[in-house]
Image (cartoon, rainbow, N blue to C red):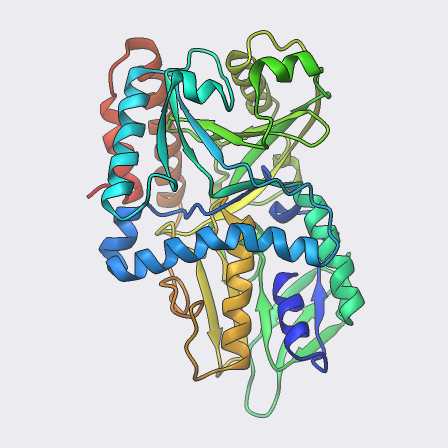
Length: 426
């Protein structure tokens, strides 16, 4: 959607169509946690190790400015996506988490982040913004906004149609054929074929369902719940009045926000990886994970008595090296973007501008094409059962590390094993 919008604004004469298997926003783009953040899936040290300090600094600054730019773009297009630029609170709910988060702030400052970019808040200052149970303090960064993701995608769909982009929903793509000799690239659907100079594949967690893409990314399921609207008294007690998103310092990721209509929308990882990178709609609902999310949410907000009214989920795309890719192959006419690992709200817009730059200015370099994940490919995942064993081990180690820290108050060796398994340790 972002790529079509960007290309059409640059050259209204371009003929562009978008093919969607279900409806626009059906996948992660419309059903995510609503964080428009400057987060990047790989750690700072990993990016520096692979691409150098200058590339890291450039990427960090561009992603940070892109948060506000996404909100500006939506506003300019008249899209009411409930955008509120309130930042993120990452709470420490144990001394181990507090130590880990303080070290993260120290490391970020050593790498050039200012105090205004990320800071440690003692308990009193943290509670002035938002409050969870058993909190010791929190880090705060302003580089995140709350959004309603489905409203954003549906709004982009309407904007694209107004620009002349043809959108075909309920149109399943079965095959993508590269350019050959004088023939254009081809997209084969159930009912027809589309020929184009360039085909942009932006299929994210559904990528493994396409021929030849089974090992391109691992589809990991992230699930969410939402409460009924909560009373004013609850929000006067817990805060989050500026639209701050929130998480805590555990290993198995959780994420939440206060919605515009005063619900708690809350999600997390922990759903099992399905052997063979299988993606099926029935995996969108895992009662065991939903119950765990609900118990976690009620632990974070122990005096909340509201009912859970919504439950949903879907697959995100995790590359083998935790690094997204933006690719344009001028010979084949095939392009792609994805592998955001759950950080795709802002990254997808950044990738779209990089794609547009590459497609319209082949030989020129821009601040977007200089990003280290542009025109680079991640290596493929291992064959099964190695893929299943590795990903399942990672999820198990993260859960074990959190359980040990909660039960015994000490750092688990599983934490270090998890970092080594994901390649995020030095």
